Length: 113
View 1: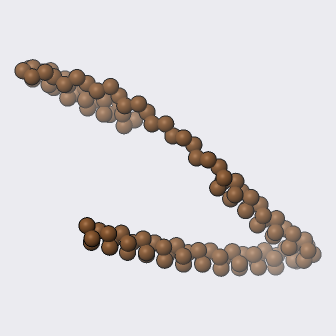
View 2 (view 1 turned 60 degrees about the horizontal axis):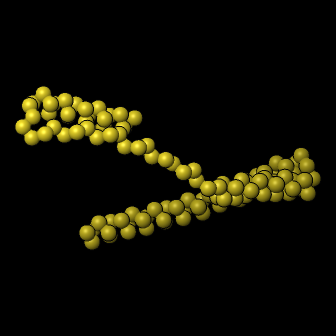
View 3 (view 1 turned 180 degrees about the vertical axis):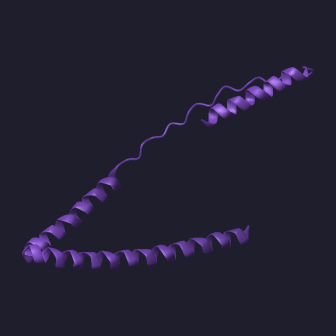
Protein backbone atom coordinates (compact mmCIF):
# COMPACT_ATOMS: atom_id res chain seq x y z
CA UNK A 1 0.00 0.00 0.00
CA UNK A 2 2.83 2.39 0.83
CA UNK A 3 4.51 1.62 -2.48
CA UNK A 4 1.30 2.39 -4.33
CA UNK A 5 0.96 5.67 -2.47
CA UNK A 6 4.56 6.64 -3.32
CA UNK A 7 3.95 5.77 -6.96
CA UNK A 8 0.80 7.92 -7.09
CA UNK A 9 2.54 10.83 -5.35
CA UNK A 10 5.45 10.64 -7.79
CA UNK A 11 3.11 10.52 -10.76
CA UNK A 12 1.13 13.51 -9.47
CA UNK A 13 4.33 15.49 -8.85
CA UNK A 14 5.57 14.73 -12.37
CA UNK A 15 2.19 15.71 -13.82
CA UNK A 16 2.19 18.97 -11.85
CA UNK A 17 5.73 19.82 -12.96
CA UNK A 18 4.95 19.13 -16.61
CA UNK A 19 1.75 21.15 -16.38
CA UNK A 20 3.67 24.07 -14.89
CA UNK A 21 6.28 23.96 -17.67
CA UNK A 22 3.47 23.76 -20.26
CA UNK A 23 1.81 26.81 -18.69
CA UNK A 24 5.06 28.79 -18.84
CA UNK A 25 5.53 27.80 -22.50
CA UNK A 26 1.94 28.82 -23.22
CA UNK A 27 2.45 32.23 -21.62
CA UNK A 28 5.68 32.82 -23.55
CA UNK A 29 3.93 31.81 -26.77
CA UNK A 30 1.02 34.13 -26.02
CA UNK A 31 3.49 36.97 -25.45
CA UNK A 32 5.23 36.38 -28.78
CA UNK A 33 1.87 36.04 -30.53
CA UNK A 34 0.75 39.34 -29.05
CA UNK A 35 3.93 41.08 -30.25
CA UNK A 36 3.52 39.58 -33.71
CA UNK A 37 -0.11 40.72 -33.84
CA UNK A 38 0.96 44.18 -32.70
CA UNK A 39 3.61 44.43 -35.43
CA UNK A 40 1.15 43.26 -38.08
CA UNK A 41 -1.68 45.55 -36.96
CA UNK A 42 0.60 48.56 -36.55
CA UNK A 43 1.40 48.44 -40.27
CA UNK A 44 -2.30 48.57 -41.22
CA UNK A 45 -3.67 50.73 -38.38
CA UNK A 46 -2.42 53.43 -36.06
CA UNK A 47 -0.86 52.21 -32.79
CA UNK A 48 -4.08 53.10 -30.94
CA UNK A 49 -6.10 50.95 -33.32
CA UNK A 50 -3.70 48.02 -32.95
CA UNK A 51 -3.84 48.28 -29.16
CA UNK A 52 -7.64 48.43 -29.26
CA UNK A 53 -7.93 45.36 -31.47
CA UNK A 54 -5.55 43.30 -29.31
CA UNK A 55 -7.33 44.41 -26.12
CA UNK A 56 -10.72 43.46 -27.57
CA UNK A 57 -9.44 40.01 -28.52
CA UNK A 58 -8.17 39.41 -24.98
CA UNK A 59 -11.36 40.74 -23.39
CA UNK A 60 -13.48 38.59 -25.72
CA UNK A 61 -11.45 35.50 -24.84
CA UNK A 62 -11.80 36.29 -21.13
CA UNK A 63 -15.57 36.75 -21.48
CA UNK A 64 -15.96 33.40 -23.24
CA UNK A 65 -13.85 31.63 -20.61
CA UNK A 66 -15.82 33.24 -17.76
CA UNK A 67 -19.08 32.17 -19.41
CA UNK A 68 -17.82 28.58 -19.72
CA UNK A 69 -16.63 28.58 -16.11
CA UNK A 70 -19.98 29.92 -14.86
CA UNK A 71 -22.09 27.39 -16.75
CA UNK A 72 -23.57 24.55 -14.74
CA UNK A 73 -22.92 21.01 -15.93
CA UNK A 74 -25.84 19.07 -17.31
CA UNK A 75 -27.32 16.42 -15.11
CA UNK A 76 -26.70 13.04 -16.67
CA UNK A 77 -29.42 10.53 -15.96
CA UNK A 78 -28.44 6.91 -15.81
CA UNK A 79 -30.79 4.42 -17.43
CA UNK A 80 -32.76 2.15 -15.16
CA UNK A 81 -31.34 -1.31 -14.63
CA UNK A 82 -33.00 -3.98 -16.76
CA UNK A 83 -35.22 -6.41 -14.88
CA UNK A 84 -33.33 -9.40 -13.57
CA UNK A 85 -34.26 -12.86 -14.73
CA UNK A 86 -35.54 -15.31 -12.16
CA UNK A 87 -32.98 -17.95 -11.18
CA UNK A 88 -34.05 -21.52 -11.78
CA UNK A 89 -35.22 -23.31 -8.67
CA UNK A 90 -33.34 -26.17 -7.07
CA UNK A 91 -33.86 -29.42 -8.91
CA UNK A 92 -34.70 -27.79 -12.27
CA UNK A 93 -33.59 -29.40 -15.41
CA UNK A 94 -30.64 -28.42 -17.56
CA UNK A 95 -32.79 -26.71 -20.21
CA UNK A 96 -34.16 -24.23 -17.68
CA UNK A 97 -30.66 -23.39 -16.44
CA UNK A 98 -29.50 -22.84 -20.03
CA UNK A 99 -32.48 -20.57 -20.74
CA UNK A 100 -31.75 -18.59 -17.58
CA UNK A 101 -28.12 -18.06 -18.64
CA UNK A 102 -29.18 -17.04 -22.13
CA UNK A 103 -31.67 -14.50 -20.75
CA UNK A 104 -29.12 -13.07 -18.31
CA UNK A 105 -26.56 -12.69 -21.11
CA UNK A 106 -29.00 -10.91 -23.41
CA UNK A 107 -30.06 -8.61 -20.56
CA UNK A 108 -26.42 -7.65 -19.99
CA UNK A 109 -25.98 -7.02 -23.73
CA UNK A 110 -29.06 -4.74 -23.78
CA UNK A 111 -27.74 -2.84 -20.75
CA UNK A 112 -24.42 -2.13 -22.50
CA UNK A 113 -26.15 -0.42 -25.43
